[in-house]
Image (cartoon, rainbow, N blue to C red; front, side):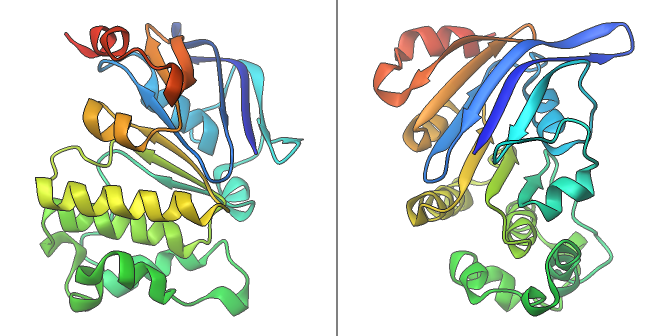
Amino acid sequence: MLAVENIDLYYGAAQALRSVSLAATPGRVTCVMGRNGVGKSSLLRAIVGHQPIAGGRIMWEGQDISKLAPHARARRGIAYVPQGREIFPLLSVRENLETGYSPVKRSDKFVPDEIYDLFPVLKDMLWRRGGDLSGGQQQQLAIGRALVTRPRLLVLDEPTEGIQPSIIKDIGRAIEYLRNKGDMAIVLVEQYFEFARDLADDFAVMDRGAVVISGDKASMVESDVRSRLSV
């Protein structure tokens, strides 16, 4: 479904991605791992269109989307949960969820019950302001908002960062549920190794803007991966 093919990305004169390739398919979680500053978030920003690429191409459902704007990619079924969550602090939980309506057709402009089943706290706090929620609750809200867009590709950037353990488990269960439905591809950037290992069907480890180890879960050598994550 998603094929990132040998992409390069620059911030000014600094090269952030070097001939990076990655694939994601429905019913599987592709985990991207690596130390801070190796290009993981830049890869996700390239996939969703927030940062232009300088070389290579990004294929989505057989079409080259490398030059499409972010909103056009969203309309094609790509949803992004950014690092730091970026919810609207002065809007209510309900209003934050409703911001996900923009890329969907009129008949889909409602919040699916599935989202409240995955994250019951959102239903309990519909009228609370987003900025009043805890970090973990805001992360659940950010994932819920992405799911409102009915994505076929869900891109998550470090969803466990700064989150309490109980909510990390809830997020892990939600990702497992979405994967097991079989109609969604998931790309997950994560530094928490155990969380990534347990969820990953496929993985890629980055270092200095390049993919240095990749494969499916069965081929993962934990010691090699951990050595690329340690400072």
